[in-house]
Image 1 (cartoon, one colour):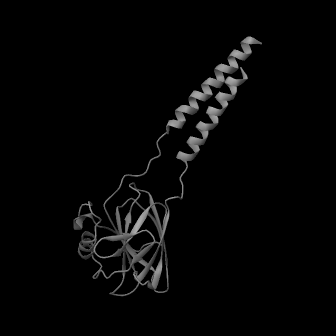
Image 2: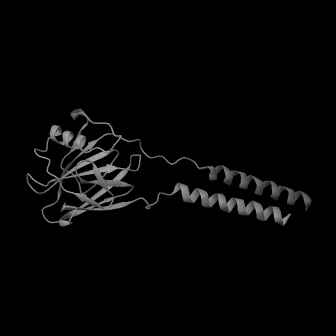
Image 3: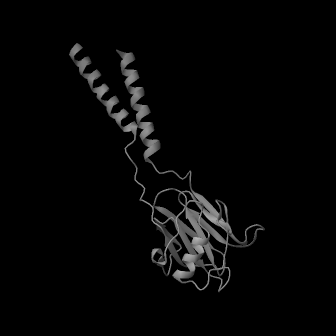
Length: 197
């Protein structure tokens, strides 16, 4: 009898661990990207972007992305047409191009914000040259939290979003079914013990 109870308790503990591991958000895919005027150098640091989940930054043209180092590019004038053309010229292989109507600009931009976009073009201080960063949401889902920490004169002016990914939802994992089964087994064992007493 005690062997059955131990097995049921072990199953219940394993199920709880599975639910805990899958259901809680993790920082394992978080990324911190440092941006430089010359990322190959690197020289002239402009700031750091922290992503809550997997993301990458345009490293060099055309369309080369990196998860730790990004480049600063000239996108001027900062209007929807120029920005859309820049993003389309630097898409990762397999991504569909965007129309000007797809650009969704937020100005002024807070230093931290959340987005469901696939591509985010950030405009930082720097005048007409070396003023833009391109970030790609690599998580496969929305709910990307971004936080910009700029060096002097590299504050975040505005950002423009392209594409929209589905919002991340956490499904009830198979561990939940395992947990319910284990609890049911504990209940049956307790009932049998009461009958035997």
